[in-house]
Length: 451
Image 1 (cartoon, rainbow, N blue to C red):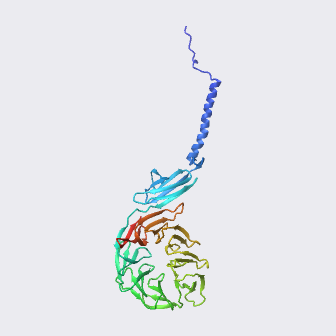
Image 2 (image 1 turned 90 degrees about the vertical axis):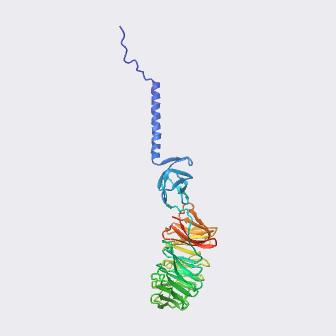
């Protein structure tokens, strides 16, 4: 009879050796779990091992956007594949990164920015400037040029003494007046609303309508005025200074009236208050008062005149000697003195001024100006870009633009190079620059589109 086969014949006894091996396996996986799980958690929370610094660090984020959009992004010379502005780049190890934005038809933007642990670095609304050539608007020999306060018109005086205006929006030139009988005409100023122009010719003054070309100029030729200024609020009122004092000139009635009976070096009228400069002292006085003027400060500046846009600060300067004084009427004896050839206003509280080598910014809320840049090749002209984040200037027959973002070095871009660039101005939208330069020994009025 055949012996029945045992159902337990495949069972193996667990020996001490096998049990120890299995425990090692368990311990191995538990160890891996205990090591890897925290690493995964740290990784998902943005931690990385920094081989350069030899330690684990929390990463940072870079948020970058540009105007226009869809610019390529480079970090330390390597393009970020399949990504363009605007974007958010995460999990960057703390370090300094060279960031470049590049778009066809535009100048590259490059800046070194620091990415810090557990923080976000922003490079937002970076303006990329068009890489364009200027277009010629007119070939005219220009002897003087002045943009309107709203930057929508420019008035010119040509070599043959013709007064011409350019409408920046329509690109149309209009002949305003033929001033051939007037010697050495010079544009002094626009009225504050940009409708009238004040021109000086030797001892005569012409008030020209900038819009109604058919109206003949008003001539102010008597009283030996040393200077004439517009009223801040009324373009039918002017104030003239002579040895008798300050006269109010009404263009509508043709009447004139002595409103201040003292000969001074220069003055500013603000409603019923006059600020005047006389024998190196700045005074303040009510027009109705004839005695006891208030002394603001003493300033030694022969030939200085006020160059004011606002009255919170007084701006006194002499362009020939490049002297600039910023005076706060409420903080006496706190005058700021700098070297400056000219100024450009951004708004009622902020201006820039420049000399042969430097560009400065002054904000009325601050005590001291801020140096923006020094240019070894020299500075010809400088003005604000209307959005207030850049300054446009000429240097060494080039037009350049510099940003005010002072993280690392300020980005500076050359927009155009030409011969004898002058009369720099910009429209109110900030997308077109206007200037004159020489082509084939003739001066040309040019427009350069930059946005």
